[in-house]
Image 1 (cartoon, helix red, strand yellow):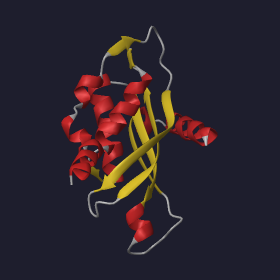
Image 2: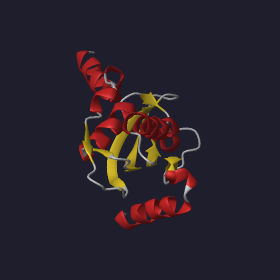
Image 3: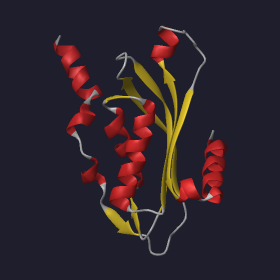
Image 4: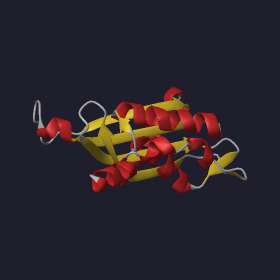
Amino acid sequence: PRRVVKSWEEIFAGYRQSAENLFTTFDTEGYDQMVLLTNTEFFSMCEHHILPFFGVAHVAYIPNERVIGISKLARLLDIYCRRLQIQERIGEQVTSDLMYYLEPAGAACVLQGVHMCMRMRGCSKRNSTMVTSSLKGDFLHQQSARMELFQLIEKEK
């Protein structure tokens, strides 16, 4: 039982973390193009079945005078993945925090996940992948920004 408790403390560590503390920012010194972190592994636990889901995430923002260290994007993702979750909510939480704390021109989070609840039980679809996106600001309202994002993600596969 102690090992289970210890592993669950690690798996669900996101409940003890706050995104607010991540946002130490730096002046862009005029940089106003997309910042994109691709192929970042994530692991989470489905809140419906308490089974794992995992995959890769692509997190982006378009700076508006301030940038953050790139590792902060991965840490932000981890805060929300290390909770009982649904994939759709993770993307929304990541982009909402980016918009709130960083105030960029746009934020995006695309997740490609494999859900063990889909593979192990129920419909048993072993080759299925779920793709979700959360787009805010310029990524949502400007087709050119959205197209550039998805082209860069596709290029990195």
